[in-house]
Length: 238
Image 1 (tube, rainbow, N blue to C red):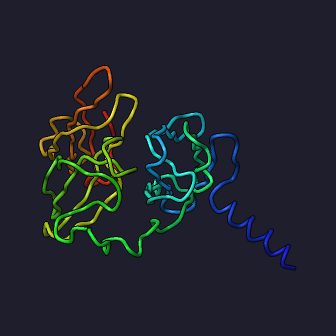
Image 2 (cartoon, rainbow, N blue to C red):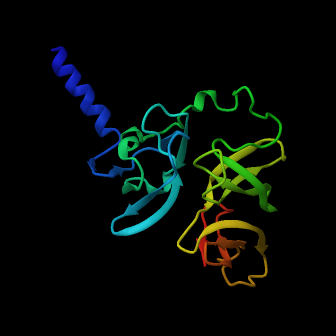
């Protein structure tokens, strides 16, 4: 009986995060809100890539812990619900088995109660932040975008984090607004509300929120734009 119980427990733990594991990749059918990743600075950075079907979705660098993690980071995957994501990793594959999905962020219960966590000024839930970008007020909400590395405490993976507030004191952190793509990482920029439909993205009476930013790559920097029709919750790159 004890032997059977151990087998059942092991099966449940395995299927909770992975449908299949081959070499340096795993496949996840997304059923939860977040994917949690273990991080250790004893590991070198390596590229992790998400693929859906035959199409590359995104990639980023992460120090995936193979032993005890120093901390955990996460990715909000609500937009991927019921899709199967193949996760490949160019580094030590040992940490792939520690990745798991959940409706809670790893360490969520202690979040914002950490000893050295600032309590008045905004801080992101996990990762590294730098200069604010695209500060704008629209329909009762202050929007703050900011330079962000969601996957460790040092500079890398430049993305636009996003938070909103109704009073500039209490902030709600939203999913990442803009993430690196084949043109490069997402550097600083600004946002505007296109009331006059100058760019042609408006839908009916809904004006587009338009973001202008720099895509940075080793070869060059280029100016880009993206737009949102749902108050910055989702974005379309142009």
